Image (tube, rainbow, N blue to C red; front, side):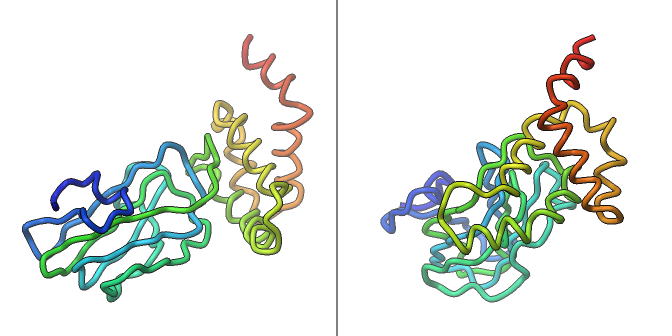
Length: 196
C-alpha cells in the first residue's frame, strides 16, 4: 500500500509514502515538542535526490539545512543531524521514480520551550552538549540541563533578555552566567515581578 503520509512514521516495509509525481515533492514532520535532532533515519524506496531542512517555527524559507541537496541511496540510511534545533523537519524530494519513502525516524533530545531566539545560547552550549552525549550515556549533562531550564522558564521574558541572548557571541561567559541565574536562583523573584 502507498500514498498515506502516516505510513512514513511506521518502520514497516509493507507500507510507504508516495506521490504520483517524480519531481519536487516534500514531506513535513511536526514534532510534539522542540528537539535537538541528532540523527535522521530514512528508508528510501525510490527517491533519487533530496535535501533535509528544519526549524523551530514553521517558516520553511528560514529553515536551516540539516542535510544538503544530494543523492538519495535506495536503502536504509542514518544521517547525522548534529543536534540541530527543530520542531519541524522537511524532506524535500527533488527527483524520484516516482517519489516514495518507506519510513522516516528522528532521534534527538527534547527541549520543551526552545524558541529561535535562544539560537545564540544553543550555538554556545552545543559543542559541550554534543561532546557530553558522545562520551557518556549517563543522563546528567550540565549544559543540556541549563539549556532545558532556560528554555522552560525564560520564554515569557524573551523581550527583556533579548539583548543578553544577542551578546552571547561577544561575552559568552557573563551572558550565559546571567541567564543561568535568571533561570535558577533568581527565577522565583523574576516570576513574582512578572505576576505584578
